[in-house]
Amino acid sequence: HRTVLAKPGNPPKDLTSENAHFLTRFGSWYDLHKEDGLVDQAAFHALAEAHKRMHDHARWLAARGVKDTRIPPEEYDAFMDKVGPFSAYAKRLGKAFRAALAELDPLTGVQNRQSMLAELERERSQSLRSKQPCCLALGDLDHFKMVNDTYGHVVGDQVLAAAAEIFLSGLRPYDALFRYGGEEFLFCLPETTPDQAVVALDRLRERLEDRPVPLPGGKSLPVTCSFGVALMTADAKVDEVIARADAALYKAKNLGRNRVEIWAEGDAGAEVGLAGKVARPAKNQKESRR
Figure 1 (cartoon, rainbow, N blue to C red):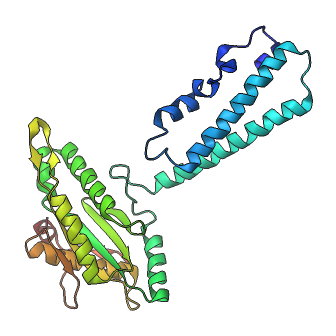
Figure 2: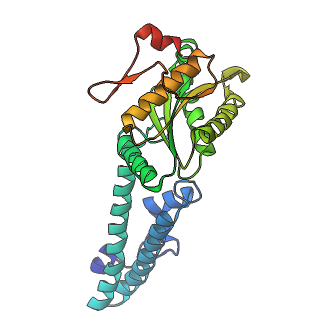
């Protein structure tokens, strides 16, 4: 705009360069990260292409603005027709990512509990309509308090992040993983029977066990996880199914940890309280399962 209105002589090189779109904050950021996992997707590539078209037109318009005493309104309007969509698209994309980030756990990158119940309710309804089984599972990293006490919270955070990465990489695209709290993860496994869930979770359990977390000094820390599985049913609400998975998790802990157990009638453990929250056992019982 300054070049077209003020006609300062030769336009600045960062405006007339064929790579002008790379000489901006967005352009240089995109060029550096365009092959990264998060940026390497159609939405960002489309935004970058709109950015380039806008700068290509700006370069042409600035060169003409220096030479000519007057730029036809329709040519300026054509330029603004490229500016408007880029700005609007960038704002929509930013809003979408802010909304997504609000539902992600910043440490592990998996979904947090903010949107968990709503998503689990949808999966339960879908399971009942389609008459396809759907399982929930709780996974709890074994002896995690000892990890924090021995190595500190920085290593504890590394363990959580490593476990989440292994879990995510081993799930199907339509499975869901949530950080349930502390060192606990909740899995939603649609179209999966309890026996199939055991097979899938056993595979994740073995992958976690086979990949110790590197420590400073060349050492490594073995990590294991215990799991409890419960089937979604018509007679149990989502929070009740979670409580059943939690009871199965307690059973796995009591049977020696680093294993997968399925909830069965009569399993002792957490129950759903009046407020719909999982009621935990006394503190000494809670610590015994770690």
